[in-house]
Length: 447
Image (cartoon, rainbow, N blue to C red):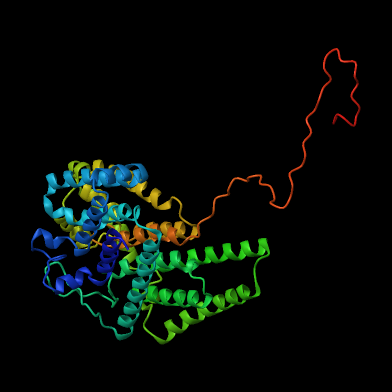
């Protein structure tokens, strides 16, 4: 394994095994108020930056690496360059404190795409399997926390005081429960069709769906169920049309249709998993909050709307909505408020380019997972705070292409002679010479 790929693998592992709530427990002011600037950036970001430098200096001349990326990954480089422009403007308007969010949430996915462009397929396959294994381990942690009604790493507020939720939800290793649900649902849709064994595929399905119940992400759970139904219907219809639907596949579909609802019903009836989903299927205060946050636009002045407001003013305005502290669970609205309309338009343009790169060359289930990711992310604030959701899914999508079997190119046909066969005798066509009285017979000339 080459050094850039090894460093990238280490960075992705650190994203999961060193969550921000654990860094706060270690005395590092990652999400808390105060501390030095270096504490506001996740350790995995530093490792990812080292991976980019290792990839650049592996060619002796770093400029060759930049030229290579400009030719091979133009959309990624435009995304990175646009982020640099936004970061410089944000630094001049709000100071250096606002850069940690941009670095951890958006710069890292761009750097991951750069590294993976020069990473061998074997390393990318290992990275894909590692991310899936980490998501599975995180799902198990979330299920155990829910069963025990105890968080292994209790979260804290920005001032260091203990965080209390109105209803218990596991935080596991991916920070907020909704961030856990976002990554878990997307990983399920991407990884599920790539498992060859039907038994392991069913086990992954039941485990991650149970984890989605535990994390309480209603949008993630409903979206993943809809995506799974769509994939199952497509596979069933394609198999019936092509007449390649085997008896074993029929039994698997039957077991799947019967087992999944039965297991989820047992979980709801005998455990507290999914309590939040079961209790709040109606239009509750959480859903009402998602409409109240649009009052933020009325509170912003014209200058605020054009040039944005800082995170502190945003916190003050959000606390004034409804007379209570409200978390704005809409990352588009948060970015519009923080960046301002001018920078927000630039961000949407470059982010669309980056998403189009993830879409390019991806399989159908991977594209479906990307759509699910964006839809669910638009219902929470996973992409408007410091987080690793986009980084993990970017690596998962780009590495998934290495698992697809390569289609051999058709070689041009060459007319070769069989070694045991004599070449046919070709007689030249002869024409009589002008003025010659001798006539040639049919036996002498081949017509």
